[in-house]
Length: 80
Image (cartoon, rainbow, N blue to C red; front, side):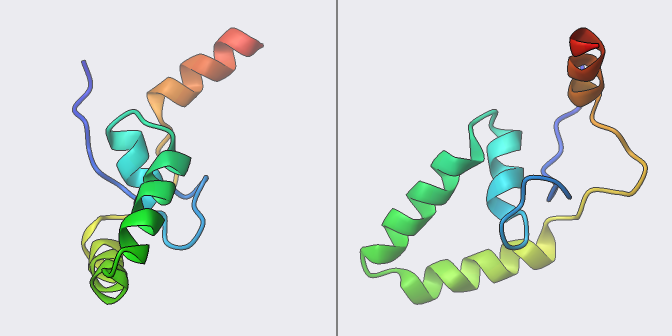
């Protein structure tokens, strides 16, 4: 089994890819992560939510060029 890594993917991102990376890491649709992030932010945590997002964007490494996700490759092979 491959080691799970929290990364910001190049595809599927809206701003910096933080929610897409978190969703991919926990095997959850990134849309749900975004919705939860916005709901929590609306309940009085807007500034900390933005600051945490910026920090996460700086800390979480970006997906490397030329590295393919094994799950994506398998999916593409099945569809072909």
